[in-house]
Image 1 (tube, helix red, strand yellow):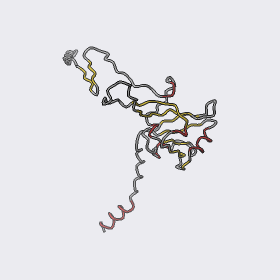
Image 2 (image 1 turned 30 degrees about the horizontal axis):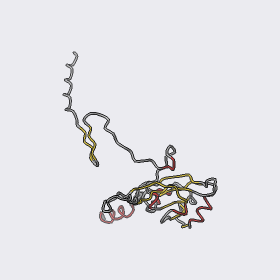
Image 3 (image 1 turned 135 degrees about the vertical axis):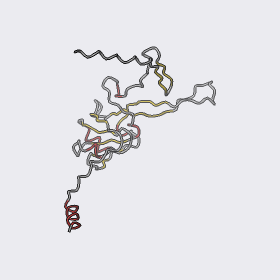
Image 4 (image 1 turned 60 degrees about the vertical axis):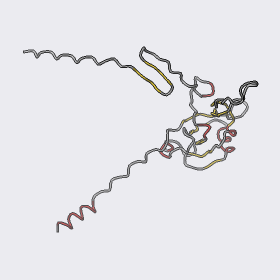
Length: 185
């Protein structure tokens, strides 16, 4: 009898709702794009380029690879994938026609598809742009082209030393704890 009671209570117990999915990857960027005076939709991309050697310089010298921010037309972005927020794939020409009068776009922050969890807040027809060249894209109205230059960290106080990849801070010894006041009678 007790077994059947426990079994019926177990089977009748409510099943907890599944937890909402955790978004995969970083949050995307949201940008407003529209055609310029020439009718072209321009975006800022980050491209790595190897500098050309200087004439007369040591040919065996290793030259640093530079990441450059450039303004290019939307159809010139390498490996560009355009989808809508509901997952329909579009070709670049369709996207350019949709954005001719302006529109809001979602840009992947890591060059991988944007998590559907992030896309729930957008209408189904919002365009989602994904490309490895758009990874370092930051919208900053104070910087032409929307790309913020690298930040230079300067020591702000004595005792702070900054080395590449390491920040060391000297901390003063702790102050003694205050002595509690005697209780008032």
